[in-house]
Image (cartoon, rainbow, N blue to C red):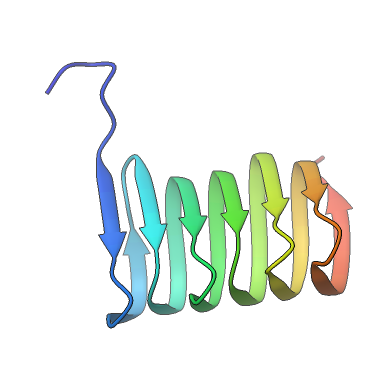
Length: 108
């Protein structure tokens, strides 16, 4: 694999993962996750369900999320997302229509 290529991991719509999960590169979630997740970039689809403590450089949420989020760079909450979380992030983008309940603090 070339140095500039990234790994891509996909959790399909009918998949459910539980536990401590560590991904390199990109993670695309269409299914469900329950646990602790570490990845460089995470993108969730509209019908995804995540109940987790997540740490990433970039995170985009389009589905439902419950838990804790720590994003070093940019967290994006799309209009289709429902988020109930304690968020710590560098940059935050919230689209009109997103449902959010929780607390937001900046990175120190």
